[in-house]
Amino acid sequence: MADLATPIAALLAEMDLSLYDLEFAGGTLSVTVTRPGGIDLDAVAAANIAISQWLDEADPIAGRFTLDVSSPGLERRLRTREHFVLAIGETITLRERRTGEATRRLEGELISVSETTASIRDRELGEVEVVLDNVERARTVFSWGATAKPSPSKGRVSAPAQGRKAP
Image (cartoon, rainbow, N blue to C red; front, side, top):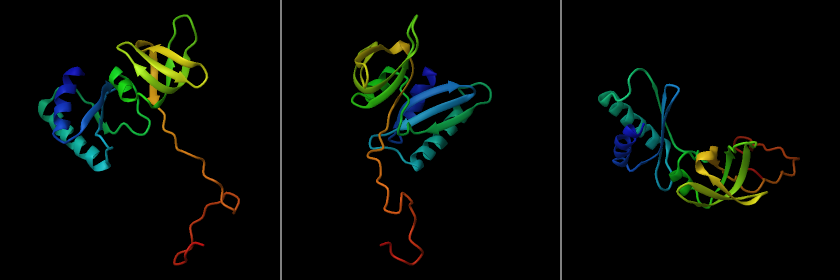
């Protein structure tokens, strides 16, 4: 898929977008796009149209496939070293394969990334270094903030009646 990444990234750059991820699996070409400050639905739709037209013209993939263009979302998948670098300072969760041992799940702040490893300040284990090639699955974790306090009506939430102001 590396041969697709360069032309798709160039196409997206013309639209002030960046290619975050590209994956072809199970008959689906998944293209994840982003831009500084976030991305909206109109930009994703425009990227979908442009990539679809380019794929129709260039015909780089033999046979039938589905194109899926999306944003990384609030909780982004971390598949490449570059993804990990972009997530330094954020809370992440990951599953680490370990030879001869059970798979380990870690969650905490991503502290640093080298060419081959990532250091995480795990909530239970403290600072842990993980070999990137041993990461089975990883993503950022979005914190929704403080839990809402229940209203005096015992936790029920209701909208005011039409034409009346809420108290």
